[in-house]
Image (cartoon, rainbow, N blue to C red; front, side):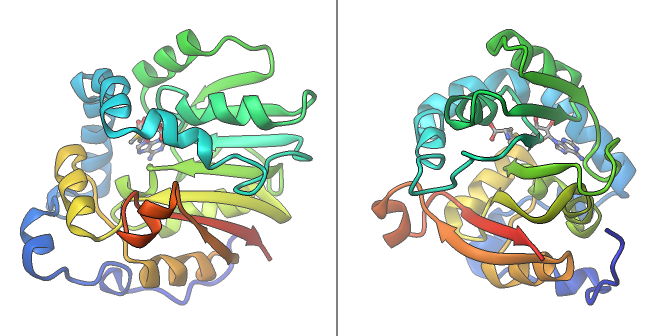
Length: 242
Ligand SMILES: C[S@@+](CC[C@H](N)C(=O)[O-])C[C@H]1O[C@@H](n2cnc3c(N)ncnc32)[C@H](O)[C@@H]1O
């Protein structure tokens, strides 16, 4: 999908943060050209950060919480036949997709980092999953190839989300569904951004980018009621391609 964008100014999609959030949020992605930052991200996940994702997943509760999103009352992958896990990392979400998806559904999981892919392959052995090394801004799939896309905590590694989100929208078929999870511009989100050297989003700016990519904001989701009330856990949203 190469539709025109209504967003050209990066400041439109990254409004300056204020107060504590401004101090805490990582600025790494703003200080270097994208190609250089992407190389940094790749090395980051190839190295110690990638090794730590398993442990931090347990400590933050994400390892367990990830499963809650896919319950039938949440993001329902039943009925989908070609599912893409974008920026699959160590396979935490792929595992849950596999658990809930139809037995004949095929899952493609890609990541920039070869080490993360190795971890994912070790973690999940299934003939229904293919692991692929790819960059979200240049996906090796034809238009409308998937009927479902899951993208968890990866878009924050793009200083400008448009090229990546457009690619995800391009490979998703019309009326196909997407689960998008990103770090929010809260204080806890800013701390996460510092740890993982990524940016954050506020709901308003994310919604505008999704809209520019032809992705309709269907409903926000939350891990638990506590996450909803205290604005914890980041932005989790179900989208549909127009
Ligand atoms: C925080 S981890 C999330 C992993 C997984 N989705 C999860 O939630 O457990 C972010 C992942 O995005 C990958 N990533 C970052 N930038 C990427 C890009 N441009 N293309 C593909 N993957 C990317 C990283 O290598 C890393 O594995």
